[in-house]
Length: 50
View 1 (cartoon, rainbow, N blue to C red):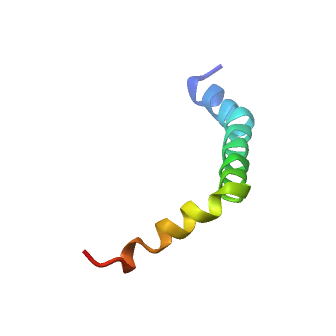
View 2 (cartoon, rainbow, N blue to C red; view 1 turned 90 degrees about the vertical axis):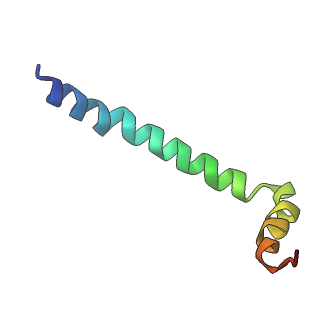
């Protein structure tokens, strides 16, 4: 088996699964119950005066 074929097979199977799990984790982290205050604080950073 060529190296390219092996890497392609790995990327098609486990790479897709890893990216999907990462995406789901980011979405769950963003919409967690305690995240509203920190998101509001981060959103108001450009509006704060020095």
